[in-house]
Image (cartoon, rainbow, N blue to C red; front, side, top):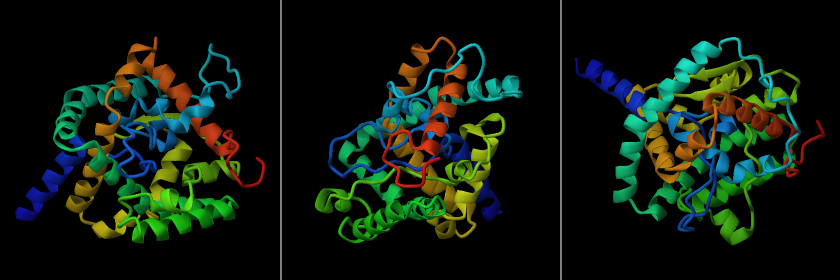
Length: 285
């Protein structure tokens, strides 16, 4: 009976603090409140729906190709259902995620929350490492390996970004299996907007599942739902506390937030696959 109650509590925890994506790397005690990751990077939940303003989206400020705004950039045959889940995530953010994250931000110093973000970013290094190798980006994979070793030791289990601060090793572009599949020519399929998880595509959904097998937290939890809920709940609560206000800005500046989310997500993911930022070291695609 106790075990069943524990699983029920874990499911409730997941509903309140949904899983979205891997956070970005920033130095501990750097006083940075933006960035890290965005919902566009690999799919995102309610609290991430405003990450477009962070450093990962710099290329959107003028480097993207012009698109025909009269039609979606990606097929969206499930639009009515996707819009339903978009509204669900929107309400979840305003009614649950934001209030909890606001209280957490008030009682937890920003420097501490940045360290927590760094910890989870460092822990997910194997995901980025393997996908860099699969994409032929040997140099980037080597940097990820070196950063993981330095931050796990000198950075005190990843709480500080010792690799960047002490050795000048800036993090390479984040890579995931969805991007890797795109590099090998697999199309995105149709657009999907998952409840809790947010915007995605068929390809990125498959990639998200595959990345879970590379994620160390999957094995730390050892199949225990309660442990997984605790880890991911803390990660996402922390991320939401560092991006408060972003989603509100996105909503108020979009005529149709759903369509804007879909199109920017698709453009962002295509940009990642093609390394529009110019920082990728893989073969030209």
